[in-house]
Amino acid sequence: MTHINIIMPVYNAASTVFRAIDSVLKQTYTNFTLYVINDCSADNSYELISERYHNEPRLKLLSNSNNLGAAKTRNVALQFCQYSYVFFIDSDDEWNAEKIAVQMSYMISSDVKLCATSYNYVNNNGSFIINYNQTLLTQEDFLKKKTRVCLSTVGFFNKEFYFSDIGHEDFLFLNSLFSEYGTCFYVNKVLASYYVLQDSLSSDKIKSACWHFKIIAKLFGWNVPKVIYYMYFYVFNAFKIRLGK
Image 1 (cartoon, rainbow, N blue to C red):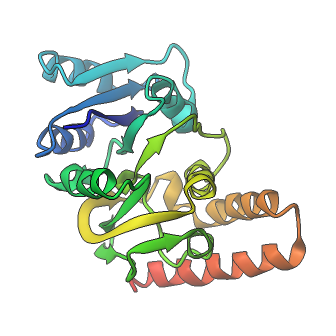
Image 2: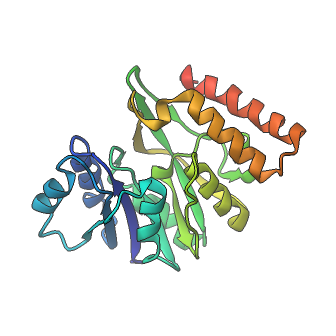
């Protein structure tokens, strides 16, 4: 069984982090190291994790000396995970027990370097499924937001990838994986739950749109027709997500 690395940044997540960590520890795929990185939480997240999981050998609890934000915090763990399979999970998300086993079966048997899955999108109004009706997700469809790839569903082979400290850093990071590997193998099975809280960064639509605009402009060198083209898809598919379609 191939060893994998799992990365979970934590900031003020005392109310959700047990759910996230327990969903990792209950995986049927057992050969992993879970890096939990406390980003100077102002609540008692670090103490709670340390007390509850102090006898868990697969969990390594790290702590930043300064608050770095999610992007740089993930980078702290990524430096230990070069040339290995890496998975992410946010401290308020949750995995189905077979998630890693299902993805690794494809990644090992078919030499897949980038893999994502369908998932439950959960917000204050309820939940609905995000999926994709093809086996391979192309970079073009990713850029057009034909489906919204959640970082907590992603597994990939890490060469020397790191996050940029910029709004929508997840999107930019995933695009770099597409640029390297071409396509993403998509498992059309719900294997995770992604929680969007009303006061989270993900819930601020105007700020998110501004971040996305800046990234698209950066990717295409401020080519106005291309920026407008891809922003159209961003807005159109954002409304579909909001309507649960």
